[in-house]
Length: 309
Length: 233
Image 1 (cartoon, rainbow over the protein chains, first blue to last red):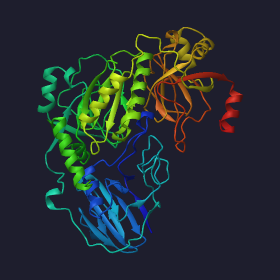
Image 2 (image 1 turned 90 degrees about the vertical axis):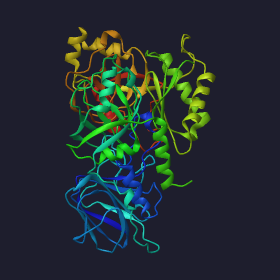
Image 3 (image 1 turned 180 degrees about the vertical axis):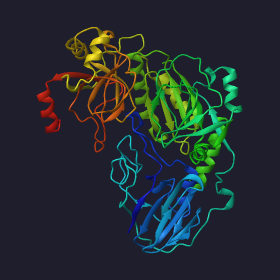
Image 4 (image 1 turned 180 degrees about the horizontal axis):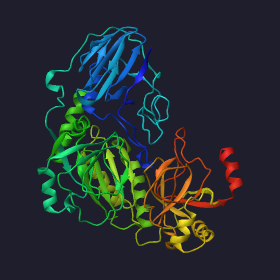
């Protein structure tokens, strides 16, 4: 049983919840750029949250299913079709042997998540299937590379049929809405001048073309100045908002480095990072301040919904 | 030992051990890490030690911030600081790394001669004369930041980084030295190359380095380099 990749797409990578316990050796954590869409794709198939999926960035992907199974597609609208007919996203669908899934151009959002019943069967490396090119780690061939044409991704046969399910409308993300990203102030936030601190929550930032799994470069209308001393490199948490000397923030995403020496305003929330990941270059956004306590509550609630204890 | 605890994100706490890079601080951070590994490993996903900090990434679904803070506080109270004492005495693991300093592989030998105002042979001698502490590991898997090199051979990073350095390249940046474990872009001044394979994902340990451990370089000839490289050092 396998998915035969005919057209590998822009950047298509296997993902799961990421690599734990190796960051002290400089190993990248990885994980889905948009945790919301990823969690729903597994949920639609009653998969465990850790079941491996394919993260398909920017579309232009085509693949053929060798055997019948159930699949789910969630996240970006990348003009998906099954055998030429429009394939709805945010729902699970039965596919038959020989069916061809195609993704075209993005309509809204950037990252779509393709899940299959039982999860894709990909050998994990250091506890995860996540492909990280910089580390030469993970992925289909354990070399960190994204999917290539003619790759074959295995899945298990479906033991019993499933009915098609869809995500309740209130949980379907709308990537065309104005973006407000929750920022937890921390790290060097207090060492920025008051006027700089205030500007962070007033100004409108723009997503630039420099975006990838490691980081998202934003353009500030006016540079954010850091007057503090140069820093000693320290551990960087997921979602950290770095301010390099040019004054334009960089948000560190799933493949962010483990340590660094730029001053940081704090970290955006995990769910905020998912929304930001889906923003195309040119999208404008605001930061809104959130307490760490509130973001903990939000994240716990989110994860418990998908993974009840 | 004295340190501050601050929350930096929904599931990360940062311990700060002062503002000064000192070998004793690295030893302290390692001692706290070991304590936490022994006492609350289940709640912790990752710990990232750096020069003066320890970032603790915990599992928000298994634990609470307060629970972690209690453990961190306890660690700071229980683990004695080496600051102000001589940090030597506790046996540390020393990793021996063969390096070929042949001009063919020492890409920056000329600019190093200029900036250090001494013959390259002397730079090499000074690079070899001491063992180095592993302050932190990052940038790439198994990229160990080692220090400190003798002040006379400390050299700032190159103005523009090279697009691709070969695996094994040994560089100097400021008072730090390191071996690039894999081919990578890089801005450090390259003084030699090691034939040693430093990262192996099939090993549980992944790489020979540990923060708090030490590294000693030894010089080999270009013939030995090629021999070891082919023989799978």
